[in-house]
Image (cartoon, rainbow, N blue to C red):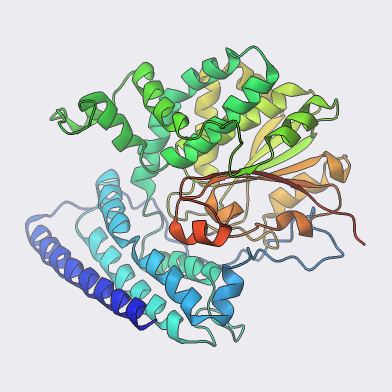
Length: 457
């Protein structure tokens, strides 16, 4: 533990030095810039649990639901070492955060004060995280136990908003969505070109997993394929940055195909593999009639979930799919408003999806969530009404959880809390050492895990 704390102290000192350098640069920029912000239409809202949230109606009334995945929030409550490990991961995200703050500042045409807001957030969040390690009674929570990962990520979003940063990853998300909207028609043609249903299912799942790998890096990946040599050692980027992203669909498809190669289903199956069970259910003549897909990151992740929704809804006229996204921004997770715009753009190039949307068999809903993890005891009234309004049995429901935050770091055992017969499908790639160790997996292992809520004994 002393070694870890020394490493955290060194990490904290390095962050402080980096902040000091950025602050000097910001001061110089401020003294030479008089450009006013042209993004005042963005309203800063305080992060708080929506008073209108409610438990997901699919939860069993006979069980006390917990979002906790074993070894994550439960470990943080009782173990200083567990909190320390997650704090190290969260502190390690600061370089990415400051890069995205700068990106969004440029996207919004904000002045240098935007980075000053980021600096204020980073100081406050670092102070909070270091205190959360030490205080067994908690800092952000009022439960009398140590702060959990859920507490830590929710406190991050609260502090971002209190510092005037409503959506710090807006610039990244806009760019990723634009790239993947250009890629989407090629992906549809690839799926539709597979003649057998089993092959189409495998391709759709692989595209969803590739989206987990491709997320928050599509722009860089596309540039490297288009403008670098095979080893990506020598790159010749256009001077006009915008031209770096004006690539044709074939280039985008080739880039995404490289990500797909890393997630192809081996003969032995993925690390966690329920492909055969999913295929058998879809072939059974009784496919799922209602599907909730909880989306993760903007861009490739969301494109993958739209492909999943399109595929499932196309199999049976009785199948309705809701794509569900965060109500407010959290890192690079797609929001409900962004999801609606993304799907509206997809239908312009996809007659199949357009028909499904027009028929009301694919739609978008807000989750009520405000962070990167998911708590089914706090969902939006819109989502609850959608579930309550469906005249189907419990075993007609499928809940799809995309990405690490919703399916690995929370809700690993979600099926055990659902009404008997409800299925829960986790689709994710293990992308951090801390999760790999906890799951007995390797980084980049794939999770395609279907569980059914058991009957109450």
